[in-house]
Length: 222
Image (cartoon, rainbow, N blue to C red; front, side):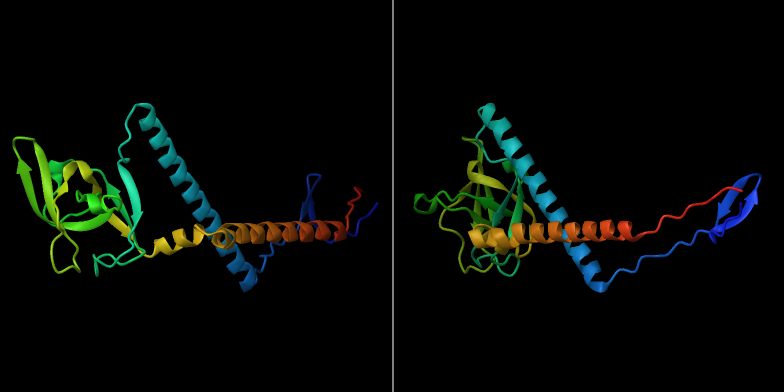
């Protein structure tokens, strides 16, 4: 019996060969943009989740050992302009815990002030001078905001230093403010998640519809 299948090219040693055409799928600009945004949001959420898990795990492990000091690495949102132009409001500073003896004049540190009137806030300022007390084996630091006219009223004690600023992330504080609200959480997390889910469902539906429309081609051997 003969076959009229145009896909069959030649028969070598009883093995039929088929002409296969590879057609590149054309992706529309809108679909490309949606894909980029989807992956960006997904990776962002993954990074946030991993960071939170590491932070929580580190805190729990140290608490179980009786260590309630801040972790080695930490992050804080800067709320004021005292460190302009180096650090602007809503920047996030990432700090690393460093021994007092290793801090130097010119370093930017995050610390709890020794002044009891403002001991409930966290300050990020630059070290102007460094002092060492041989009787107590402690270091203290004179600090000042770059944009301030005068140094801070009290010296920062090394035991109150949370860490040295190792880098900053510009404007991320706005995201934290947004996430702190119910509406912001919906905008940043739930809506992108729903968009990604809806798009995947639509794509799956189209693939199923295309599969049903395909005609089955039968090859009859002669």
